[in-house]
Length: 507
Image (cartoon, rainbow, N blue to C red):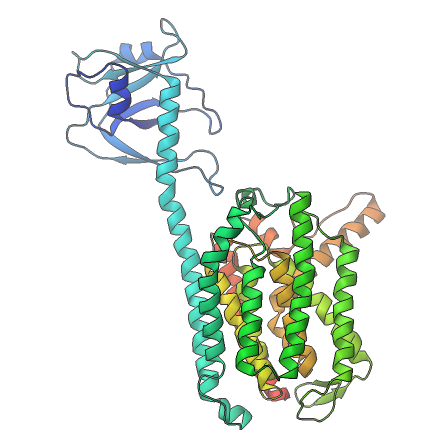
């Protein structure tokens, strides 16, 4: 069998009355024992064999890879070195004259006495060594999450600065300096600062995420992470937009009301989930009815309210040439309700990985801000402010996340995007910029329909994906969580640029 090694500390030997040794013992004195299967901790080593062959070890140090959800079994990495003053020991289990509960350690020098320690002491030191050495790898993964978030923030900031610089060429209106960048940065700074106050409070009140048992096994480590982060970043984004755009803006008032209405639905769902201590708050039918009610209310509000529009008409759908403007009439109201429901659930389904929903939502808001800029500049401020709120929350929600947005945040973001599209008719740019949300929701629909169809035809349901939504399927295929999030950011960035362009040429 292959051999492994472990390091014994001098303090543990001193407790056993071994204060006098023939040679100074290093704190990293290597020991050697026979390996066992990856998931077994029963040491079965033969001391007589070691004595008979007089085995001696080269002095070496061994680094262990700590346990985490990414490791399978217990991998070991050997790093041979000659340390000064390091005394070598052979760790062996006795099968003949020694008891099974002891491990005999022999120094390399021939005149040194035997050293005996219990297996409990050895296992305790091994576990401690695993825990300490595992921190480096976790820090490296955290650095990857920080790098992804910083890249997204830099991309959004540069894009908004470019739009502000050439906005007068796009809209032919004298906008103020940093028209979109200012609300974006203000919201991002306020939300990031508020997170350092609100996240500890969520920990204190034990408002924790309920993890599905059917999900990937690695997600079980997130069960202690607090949720309902939408309580602090959604109100800040709405408030900053109201202050900068002005409280007299009708479009911003309507979009803010719809956003808070969807946030209230998500809040009730999160509260019931925490009370029941089960991943089921509001039933699917009740949640759907509430979302349809908010969408219907917003549709009738559009009919009865005077909204500024360059076309002096309502219920119009701007599309790129040669199609142009399309008047939908009463179908516009149905499209609005459908958009509210689909966007709310699309963002909610995407919120399954650290930073996935927040980053893609920020990109979608920036795309919508560019698309609606020629039609309603106040809503462009609203979109930039909500994007900044998402970015500020992303600093706490990045990999590894210290807080989740919950349904309170995900439903609110979907409602805000739908409200921007409904007030301006920019449904087509919204569909493009929300491509990640569309794919996530479509994967769930395809999975359910295919499973039910095959079950009715052949008696046994089959699946297209290993698990729905799509990001869980990618996880089970072996792709790491930060890699999935980074790929989603890249795709969303391309879609956001294209959606903004489509919106500008359509207006």
